[in-house]
Image 1 (tube, rainbow, N blue to C red):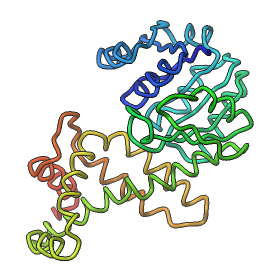
Image 2 (cartoon, helix red, strand yellow):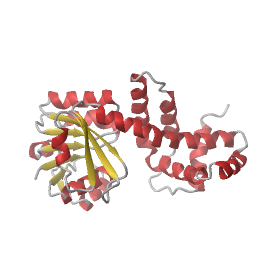
Image 3 (tube, one colour):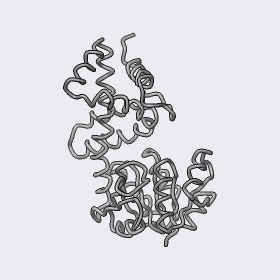
Image 4 (cartoon, one colour):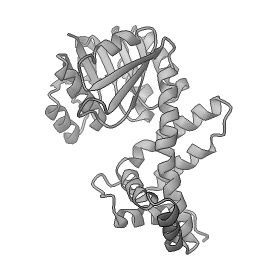
Amino acid sequence: MAVVGLLHPGEMGAAVGACLRAAGHEVLWASEGRSPETALRAADAGLTDAGSVEALARRSDVILSICPPHAALDVAAASSGFDGLFVDANAVSPETARAVAARAESGGATPVDGGIVGPPPRRAGTTRLYLSGEAAGEAAALFEGSAVAAVVLSEEIGSASTLKMAYASWTKGTTALLLAARAVARAGGVEASLLEEWAASIPELPAESLSAAGSAATKGWRWVAEMEEIAATFGAAGLPDGFHLAAAEVFRRSPRDPSAPADEATLDRILDAVRAQTQPA
């Protein structure tokens, strides 16, 4: 069994950490500078507090980075000097994944690229961790018998991140597009007519737009950087990057409310915030 250092246990990270604990590993986290909410998640997941990132790195065989994408490089830099397996499982572009890997390698670690698809794992069959890099198989072995299905793609750093970017380009990109469609209909005074047409021809969209509003309020702040990473992935492949730069802007304008329900009131606040910055003076 391995000692795994988890940086940092948000909703997804804490759930993955609990899966590793259930598989028999000791899972550490670093409380220094973290919020009471993070401490509560870590305690609920059964994680052991190492105090600082430096102490965590000294005690760990593996470091698993699961953080907002804008922080991925900083987390790798904070782990400098760690010489074990460094698994970056963040929603970043292949280019960023390679930069993280280079930073981890420069400090003595062996890098693995990862991408998580699915919700925080509570039961088997819902969440997959795609892995790539020469040591991807070692990382996958950590999750044997757990609720996380670890899938090795290749020995190339960047493969797992490419798959994650392609997947999220649709799931989260269309969330932003759906909100933008309702916002432009509202701006033009035809939102009620659009909803009638949706009810007749695409009946799932009215409910999906409420769900999109709830996601934008509770998670949109974390998705801004992810959309920018997706845009960079598209651009590097010679594809238009504007889809997801626009999606990033929708999420950037969305008010942040971690307890917002997926209802009409939340939708109104999201659409008003998105539209307020586009109206003529």
